[in-house]
Length: 453
Image (cartoon, rainbow, N blue to C red; front, side, top):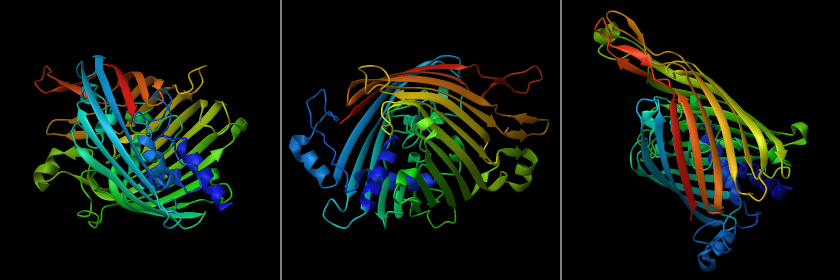
């Protein structure tokens, strides 16, 4: 039964594509389950039009390595995107990102059972249109990794995982935290589903949790005989991690993130669904979103806030499945998040949408998504000698995409977004002081090409 439980865990995790906390832990532990020794090895074979990767099985070497628990996967995205109307300014931009993943299963390699190594590296190039929309949320989330607006190579994840039994696993290392807050229809780093960050994860966790950081954690499977029924993750992470550094220089500075998450599979209407709740707390000292010029002058520093917290919830629910538990069909999703409101200006977050895969006849690999988000902003303010200025407003956006599978290893994705950003324009006024005006709704059109090597 223990072997079956690991296999079921793999199926549960693989329904979601590859920010956050427990996330880091969830990511490392859950993704580790994709290479359990009891599963059938991945095959890269087939002709040019049917194999899952462009470079195939490398003359059989790639399949032999997979059979021994070693998989090496490479993918790349090229994104052309621009603001056609509204926003801060119009204009297009092109950017891309390549991702390298190495997974090693110690048992398949002939060593000990339940051990896994996961390594992720990535490289980005070009520029995105994110700064042109007037929004807090990047319209192209793929381009912000490993670092926003910087062409860089980094290794965001090197994780060691050890399952102690069918109930418990532990993980230690450096984690890519984007793999948490899982959702079948709205998740990832902008590579395969939505491009907008707000529809890939819950942004209320962004302030407290670094994208890549050192940490340790625990995963609990409450139901040994049916691990896809429920997952609980607990973790402790360094609050100052960066994808471009090892993190050992800051891990002991007292700035930490603590998080917990629980996910349960449901069967409403005899269809697959998931319910997820989680929370984060950071001990780090942040800049307050409210500043007073008098305080700054008298103390020669800006006002600070100690710690920040967030809580979040998400769900996905299939309305139609080609086969129960297959990860294919039509369904709805939604997220809700809240934070302390200071230092995190994103006080409340809501999103809802519709997604599908293999719902159009003869287009089994095509997928699509339609989503809407709204962020309630706790107004940052600056109190000067004459008045208090509010800097931001609430933000909302809509996105729709369609993945056209040209081959199993190549996808072309038209994407359209309409975003009413939180930022404002500074303009001159009759009294000589700058005034702030709303930025018009941005129309953002783009196209993404993904190739799996």
